[in-house]
Length: 428
Image 1: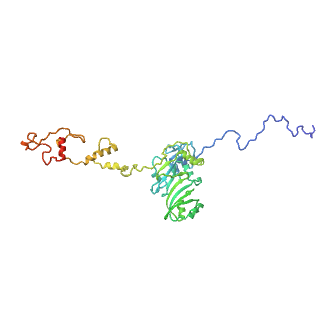
Image 2: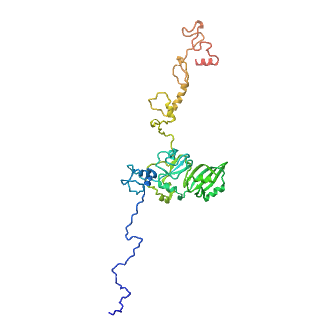
Image 3: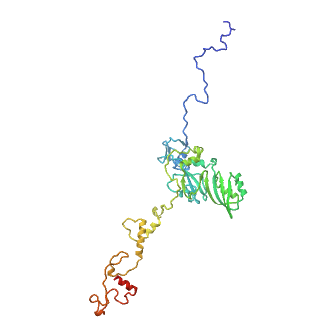
């Protein structure tokens, strides 16, 4: 074949060429070639946070436990809090398994004035946990209130939820009622909407309204979305106003309402879930599927101050007593062996015995009346008739009627006269 001759099928592929080989397919770099799904890694969290979520201790206390070698994970003793765990890891504290996680719960507490928002105060002042009633789970506060500030304070058993709710990025509005001393200038209050800087600290927008002015005192209502330390007192102090009373009346969708000072109530799980929304639940990793380990009432509860508290004096004996017990110790009567009577019966018997106790000495009655008779009854026996002729029993009358007549009215001075005599005759 000459060299310059072109092949028969030059530039064209035969119709049956490479028919047996399958066409090549392009593999996308974004999708894996295999259809097998890749398991997502389980979420991990720091060991101190895991202990705090269980309600055993706060994060700071949990880190102290780890430093003391009291925490084990899967049988290994931890020496540093820089360790993360999953839900499958076995955590043991002081030889006992870490309690299961409880359902996320939120409580509304009316903080009274004169209490510290802390677990322990180094100066020995009263804390909010000295006011709370018994039977509550371990709770942590959402933010803080000053010593003299009163009003609504949110408390929860979930540290993640507490952290999310106190962030300014959450955008929840916080409203306060403030009593101030000084002259209020409306123009100065309106200027707080643009923010203000006090001593080099920039505070965000504050919506302030004047409710009423009473002489040198006034009531204001402030609304803000961040809660820096002593923000309201510093801002109003820059306007020449002294804060004499501060009450928080709402925190986001939760209102103080008619909750008494020192009272606490739990929100229902459904209400809490609806108010938080999906975004906050996801950010806080709130758990609404677990069980409630420490049930509490959904109605307001206060601490019973009549509960007996043990004293450190005399070996820790209880020296507190009720008024009834104190009066009982003053009694000198010998205690009865019979069962004590109920209060209603005791009062009824005392009323019946009262007239008898006041009754004085009575002289002995005649033998004729020494017979029991029903009240208002009259004797039916016939008495002996006394005639004017002097008839009577032997030895009782003289001859010719000159003897001394026998009977009830023998003496003239004792004899009835007038109408009394007629009645006496009819009875005879």
